[in-house]
Length: 249
Image 1 (cartoon, rainbow, N blue to C red):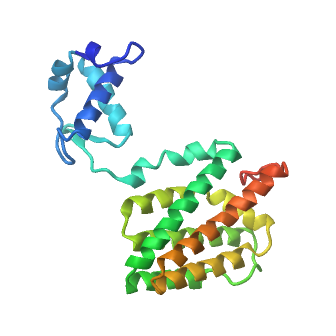
Image 2: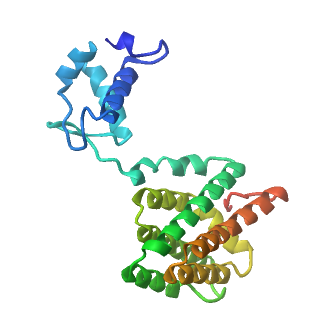
Image 3: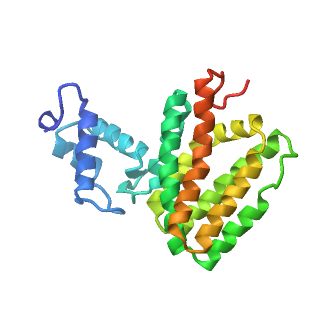
């Protein structure tokens, strides 16, 4: 049966995996459902049980199914955070021009999320954001390890905005983009004076717009905040600076 569902250059296991993935996408099996046993799938696709096992392993690595020893394979619920995990190693090994593209995407996503948060943020959300802002240092009188702390507090602040937006998928995408661009933001703090102070001031402006339920201003403030990192990396690429991806020897 796999002969009719696979191109010439596709293995039988890949063909079975693709067919199962399409069936799951079409709703034949829903999250939590158990797939038919390996023996039944092997008969359906006219392949060996080893081929089915290989196909299920592929789907498991993509977090589409959860293979439980002695129980079977179960369809997983879509989780954007898991599905975006593959982004980090791709960006980490990419040229700096690709990182610029990722930063541009982050700017768009963060701006949209901030606008949503300005509409939907609760008092609890505002309290958490205020607490994060208060943990940001007010000056640059610290060393390298402190700069990493500042960058991680920046991540936490944006994560809280994502939670306040009420859009789990956008929040997950923003979190992934935030994480994979962390190194270039830390590097910027090493070489550009006043970065932490500027970041704190920009966070304050974003929070003020969210607190005042002004989505247009929140969107603009968030976009301007992320654009600063883009400008930094673009200037480093233009000047031919080595280690422009934040790699330090």
